[in-house]
Image 1 (cartoon, helix red, strand yellow):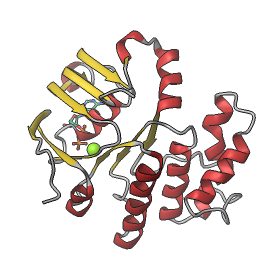
Image 2: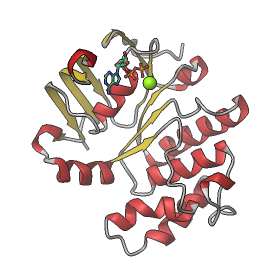
Image 3: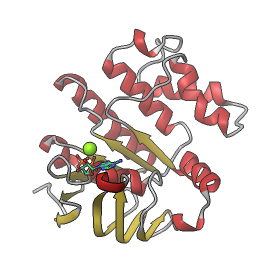
Length: 230
Ligand code: ADP
Ligand code: MG
C-alpha cells in the first residue's frame, strides 16, 4: 500500500477565460493518508470544489504535482486519466448527477458497463442493496426522493471498489435527518472498505467526524490540525 493516498505539491490552478479567468488554487501542498477521512472546509468561493475536482483528476493544474495512489496524474493522457478515475476514484456531487433516462440499476451499472465488466448488473444490484435501495432498482431518478437519489449516486461511486471516495457537499441538498443518514452511510463505507474519504462540507458536525479537517481560504490552506476529534 502507498504511504499516501493523495499528494498535492505546490499546485496552482486557474479556470475561466479572458477577463473571467480566476486564479483559484495557489501553491497548494497537501498529503492525505490512506484510509483517512478528511473534511475540506472554508468560506464559499475559497476553492473547495476546485480542489476536490483537481485531486479527483477532473481538472488539470497549471503547475505542481498531483500523485494519487502512487500515480502521477500528469503522466496520464485524457483516456488513461479517465480510466484511472473510473477504477480508483468514486465521486459524489451535491446535486447527485444521475442520468435521468436510466433506472437506478442502469445508473449504477453504467461505470462497470463502460469498463467492459460482464457482471455490471449483478454488481450494481448488490451495491444498491448495500446502500439500502434493493427495493428501488427499477425506479427512475425523478421517482426517487433526494436521499434515495444520493444513495444511488453513492452506489454508482463505489461500484468499481475505488480506493478513494470524494464527495462535494453530499448532504447540501438534503434535509437534516436524510443528510445524517447519508453521512452514516459514507462513513460506514469508508470503515468497511478501507477507502480514503475526502469531503467538502459546511456542516461542522460532519467535519468533526473526520480524522482531519483542512481549511481553505482564498485558494490557500489556512489550518490543518491533525485531528479535530478532541
Ligand atoms: P467553493 O467550492 O469553496 O465554494 P469553488 O472551488 O467552487 O469554491 O470556486 C472558487 C472560486 O473560483 C470562486 O470564486 C469561483 O467563482 C471561481 N470559479 C470556479 N469555477 C470557475 C470557472 N470554471 N471559471 C472561472 N471561475 C471559476
Ligand atoms: Mg463548492
